[in-house]
Length: 427
Image (cartoon, rainbow, N blue to C red; front, side):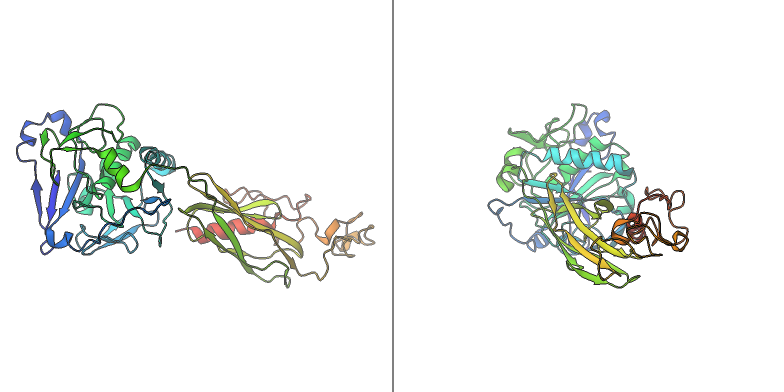
């Protein structure tokens, strides 16, 4: 493992800089697979777009991809995180989903954010496409991906690669969030032109057993298990200053995302039983992470996959209903849409009382057996009367939408949104 070069014509790999150092390595230091950088040959490197300095006030985006629905990458001359093209895979490679569950995933996402907090870098696990970004694919294993012996791998030149795709192999590493975080840091930084460092406390190192690593502001020798000349010239590297020069210092993300309900329009009237969608447009300077739909003041559904929505509405009871959407970003900022009101079925839902047999006449129904209840229900919507027969008895599939049809919960129909969204998001 180590620094290699891929020839664009044949795809051959050539070891660089490790011939003598591995012979002197302490076996305990080589027990775990480590990261690898594949240096593009001159012809391939010449195709990489020139690096553009960071725009003032902008932030560099790293997308951590857990391949939730699987991921297919194809080989190309240069990387494109926007089009799932990698310069270092061979042919077409299919990646399975990250295998260790949400708790381990959330830990490594947060740890990666902390690793890059000193710099103008935003780390997200929501695909920011079409926004330019680097991508770390955290899926699969080294052998199936075509990089046997590596915990992670990255393309490299002596300048940053725009929209680079790098790889970390959780099935090879095992369920070890901290080691995975440090491998993510090393591989993503390789795509910016950084070399390995002979410094145990920096994530660009091969060395182990010196505690948690962080990018260090100091000049340290390049090398894996002993010092060597740096691949791009000189004998030392300062990983902290190199990254700082590319992306600037970190600044808090204080900009809230924006969200607009595109449909239905405020004041729209729907006939009874008509299905419709609640569609939204979401924008954020970095990338929103979750959208929450509220119906009649209650949380109806959460969507953590872009593009957010649309949410299907089915069998809404007659009456007036209100919707709004809250959107969150990775920094905890919150954006809220305007409230949209719609009218279903009734021409007038002013709250003056129900009609006989449909929910009370507002002063006491004459014929409770026909559907009225003494005293009536304001607004003409009765307890669960519009919910399909049998819906909500007991519990559903775990989403917390159990409904007592005899209770006064007239607007519990919003649970239908949750179930519909759950079916739509299953993939």
